[in-house]
Image (cartoon, rainbow, N blue to C red; front, top):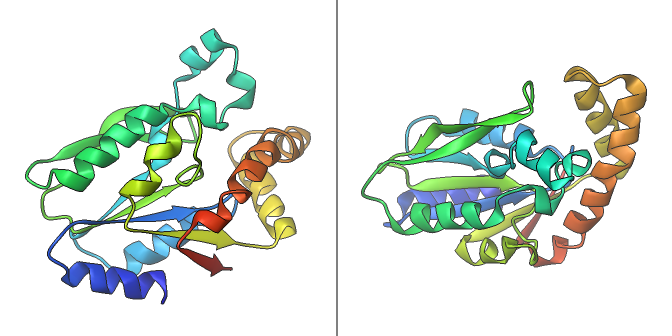
Length: 201
């Protein structure tokens, strides 16, 4: 069953459903989310990206981990789990959450909202199935999960192009994609077997 079919079923259910989309950097998570938004317009579906819970650059510098931004420990994982618990169990009020902006490499607090009429929440991110560093509570809150499987060469090409688009030189983009990003990708790839479903692109 495809994620689109699962969403159609969830929209008919008498509960709020959380569906997770997981993939390595550059796998196409954002593209799939855009397809979902186009296919299901309206206010019963909301998108909740994990990236809003990036620690700020100031905090990363203080911790000495700015050069590995994107690694599991560079997020507020416990804060994200707490948010998901509220989203899952509290359907009576607006729940606001931060949104990450690549153009400034920072999150803006309370920029988006899960409103009471939302029936399906698409949770998108790298570490939704990762069992360590505070992320272990995410998986149990998801009703179903979808791991994006894509040829590695295509993924890396996309990733390098994205880094260049947001201001890195070609060499910086190449080094980051095959350095920090690739280290993270290996961690994410290891969680593939924990997903309920695989999406092949």
